[in-house]
Image (cartoon, rainbow, N blue to C red; front, side):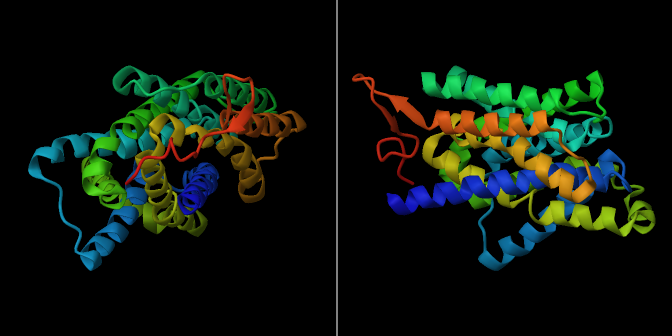
Length: 306
């Protein structure tokens, strides 16, 4: 059980780190690509890498009856999400975009409660509210970051689309395993994106090298690895708890955006990052009947057997 707990912690670290780096990566990619071509190019790179992996490991294909649902989840979790996020980041800074996407755990908790009756205890709700307070501090401290209401709404819609993917993946992860499932859904998300293929070649030729390298990075790492990690954690503790650590993403995204693309965070934004992390830590606590506080998030009773 201790080994599994370590694996979960490593998975959370991969999710937070790689997804935090994706937001400035998108801003860098948009310097040379349209939102649609960026999303397509990113998914094509991830799909080709996974195709090679699938061939080498002789990965079995999904049953025909499951393909429509898998493709729908792929569309919502990858194609629709990435297009909306890219469009939003045309007018919203990387730091603000990352904090808007942290609404996904709230959406996931609500959907999990509605459809699967997953329990989301008091400390987790309170910790989520604390984290959202931190997110608001980051937003108010955005300084000269530019954003528009339309961009904000588009990114919130992207977060909701992503939360649907997070919540309804559990059944198929159990059937196929988390690596095959993510592979299938990335392919499923790439197929409808092929309508944007015309013009991609000319953009690759004309785009700055930095923009192209940013998309290659996005395709090989943030597009693939965090989804593997999240699917693995979801298979153990459920979607509502698996997505809780994503509240930390904006805090790290602020730092990476500062180092990568020069978006300098303000003191209030940094304070918001600290509050956000504190809220996430709070979600790991539970109060028992004797009013004693203890850590319960990865206890043996909570973790499901694979």
